[in-house]
Amino acid sequence: MTKDPKGDTQVIDQIQQLWSNAQKQLEQLKRAVSENVEVSQLKARLDAVEQAKERALLVLGEAAKKHFETSGAEVPGMLRSALEAVRRAEGQVQEERNSIRDLLEEAEVVKKGPLKKKSGK
Image 1: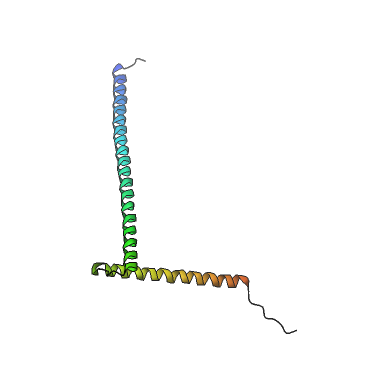
Image 2: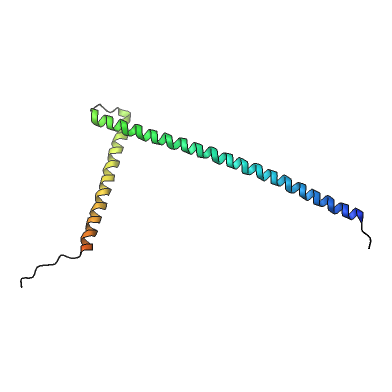
């Protein structure tokens, strides 16, 4: 058997072409992963800044509420409905706490068992 040098050359060319394509795909994948990492890092920073903003707004709101409650200052009209909504929510929270407390107290009574009557013997 004789070797076909032309056939060997074609196989080598095909292997080189496949290798080149694989390298290009790997580079594209690396770029995509790098971009995703960068976007994720930016998103994490954005989330942290937004959380800080929300905390600051919460502190501001609590300070304003306390100010109006303790100073007796008149609440501006644009804040009145917001303050009333906060008060309603606080009332609902307290009602829920009371309900939970009542349930826990009832459970404690049941856990202790029925009250025994004293017999007159």
